Image (cartoon, rainbow, N blue to C red; front, side, top):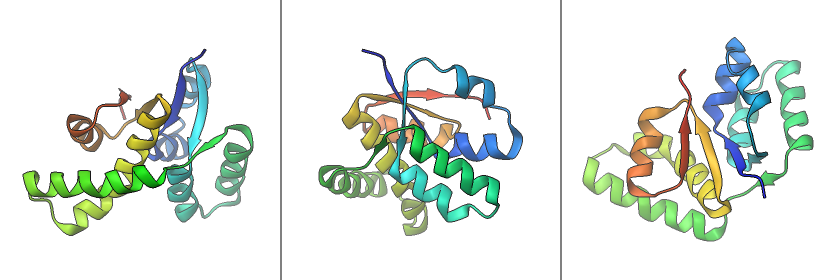
Length: 137
């Protein structure tokens, strides 16, 4: 069975703005899945018709993975632990919450998470192991 691939929001935003990941996205080895959290983040910022069409195609062409109730509960516990150890502000924790949900969804499905967001995802990875691949921004 092929590896499952889950792209983080940062990959798509960077690619939509610059096109720099297009070839790598198209040539990645594995079965691409889409995170409902990533889609929600992207829909929140979609302003142009081309961006909205890209999102509709992403939803049509790749099965959507959604965090489970267990993922949601674990995300709160994990963020509480990170907060206690790192002293992050409530704003930083809120900003990280979706990243934690994306990581936990990837782990639950055995998917490799691909991102350009090195700092946050390496920190999350130090608390919760999942398959992580970081592309240069």
